Length: 250
Image (cartoon, rainbow, N blue to C red):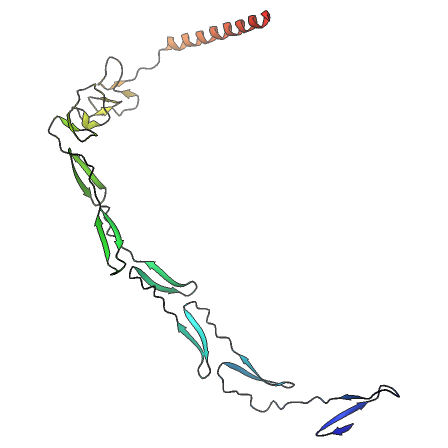
């Protein structure tokens, strides 16, 4: 061992006639001393070989609603973020997972007769009445908060309001119709003015000879069905026979 300066060095001979290698001594640090760097943002420790270690601490509260930082005196600081879109028509909040949320302000008066909006300047809900005008002179236009627009005919007794907006005389029983208001009876069934609503299954109001009267639709006569079957067989037979004849002539 050779002492050079303040350190001792070990001389190792590899073989005769070779250069001697100097092995530097391993210095041990005194970890009994304090490693406090007076910084609350580091975790202080001591490594026997390298000495004091000051590892930055992780400041993360897993909260999307805070800005995470570290103060050298106080340590971790979690500052709430400001969720403000400067829109008075939204309700601003923060979700710890998703962050800022801007939910449209609910403007609903539960009235189908208004269009509900929010004023982007004042944040006040605005309920604008809808227009129920059908541009027909023969109707009174109004609006029901639950069902919406209503167009009530405004014709004298015995008249109806047609699609052009004119009051026309109501049709007699048996006349063609598309709406019950067109009929003197107040019923339109099977496309004609009928004496009743005629809603029973199997009944119609447009049967030949009784147009305008609600009658049971007669079943197809059995004879007609048999005749149809016979005709089908006959036509089928002659059709096949004729086809064979045509083939034989070629």
